[in-house]
Length: 301
Image (cartoon, rainbow, N blue to C red; front, side):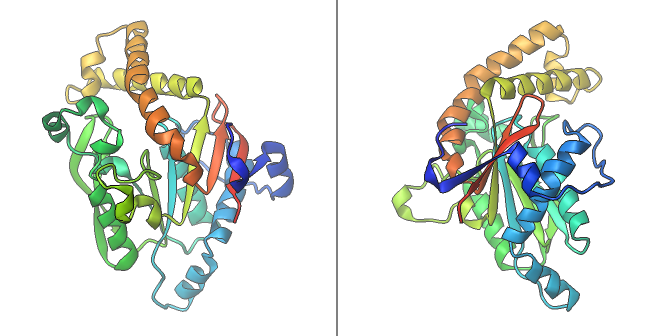
């Protein structure tokens, strides 16, 4: 778990289950999520309730009921390493936040859409550092979040495809959600091009509550290798897939390739840029190899 200092209160899974109410739910938003129904009921349902309480979203609900203009969206961040499960947790929380409070609207976007396109990364000579702080259009992320927080109407977020391994031409429309879930690697990082003393807004400044997903690096590496192999399999019949170039490899060779990429790229990014800022989060969830949460650490209020 590492030393989190005195700013966090750690709660074991057993303690969390004892202090929270378990609710049976009819929940199956995505059959491929690596999370069992029991995990959703025992960990994520009470977590969604805790987020609603900490976000003072009762005021938002009252405004909706009275047909009054709503407050700026509550921005919930979900961050952590590559392949740690950010997208899965975001999907789970979106479903639960919508069902727990049926009158709330929830959108999800990823900062992956704000990566520089591959041709730009190649031009800058940093294609091999994709996912590192300098590979994102940090200013565009801050501008988007500032606009979402300060003005109503439609906002257009760029999108990313893991299949083509690049930013797409499709925009996701975000229009006055009550909650915006923002997931990505870089939520807790400062702009790499701006000196700290410049005191300019950071992504973290716009996030009302941020969750950091943590796990043993060997487990995350295993999840990454599995995802890589699945993408290779899916690419066999898709010439447009970035992973089609690996589709001729045997399972053993593909997994060795994935392990090499992890060690050279993702592990370095994790150690240098992601883990050092995890204590900027409001909540750290510690995952076992099975994706089961074994401990939670809340930042003291």
